[in-house]
Length: 114
Length: 110
Picture (cartoon, rainbow over the protein chains, first blue to last red):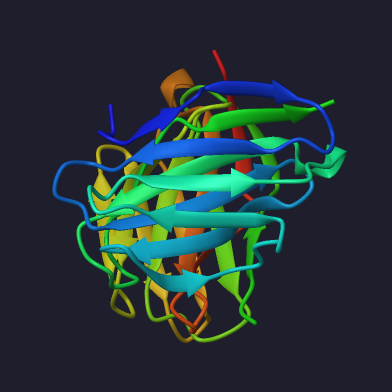
């Protein structure tokens, strides 16, 4: 168990809908990262937050947004969902904000857009 | 932007055999992670290499970083079914973002 909790584990929804994925980092970790994993694109970095502030941004679509709350949990909001958004979404956390820190990954949220 | 290319994409070996997975970067490597993923599960940290020429071992897995070749290798000795999974290398893309290779799927036949 990595200590990173992601909910829900599975999510099935329809195109055009909006969903929220939730992540609770390991106790004491200030950084949260979001990744999207699909068969054709592999593991793609979306966004990183450190202590409530956006730290780094990847190829995150405008339809996607994220935030980190004062209690350090994070939410990834996906709106106007398309079939191509179906993927495994991972959250990871680390103690600090440096790139070469050990990341602990959650078990992911499997999103299926029908 | 930096890219990480892993080879081979997939590998099937007989239990007890040795194997090597390579990760090549399109730009200078200042450090590199190796993670392992079981299908449909999260990534588990294996090793982090931060210096050129650095070599680390954990149980039967050894990783090396060759910064001149912009490459890292992961070597598994005497493979076991428990080694099966997807191995991913990750590195800073030089803009502060941690990116990953496409992964190498390993199957170990008993």
